[in-house]
Length: 194
Ligand code: ADP
Image (tube, rainbow, N blue to C red):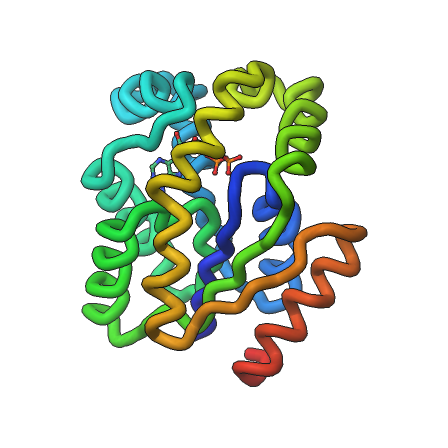
């Protein structure tokens, strides 16, 4: 299996690149943000809970997020591999994912970390907020909090994978296709294409 963690701050372009990687490597895309948003739209209990955190730009509690993610993996027993987008976002999530994948005799192959300067992130998120309808992209204070939460709670997850020799930093500024080629090169250098 080819299991990729697509990493980077809010606005780094994870969602955009995930769609292209899924297509190229025949993977299942699991975006925790998208799954939470689908639950909010469907007015589920999970959606109501997640919304109360997401509206402020805070993280949804680990246990809720981990259980949801594991259930999504289990819905795809024949997958070739997964792209985890927006997960893991804390060290406990990373540890839980390692344990869960090990129980299925598989592991994370590589973490691809999109590197984008802060100023560019805020610009991209405000731009996206104009037509995405995402409340958390429309307010500069919420954006600032998401970047703060990323720096305080999420950035350390990179070290978790660096310690396993799985961390690859990718320059995240340029055209969508340029960045995609950089990501593919990093994957193909480390692993044969599946
Ligand atoms: P972005 O990367 O632009 O912040 P996402 O769609 O990945 O957008 O996430 C939106 C929000 O969903 C986050 O701000 C957070 O509240 C919640 N969320 C997504 N993934 C996780 C996660 N792994 N753990 C906790 N909360 C999460």
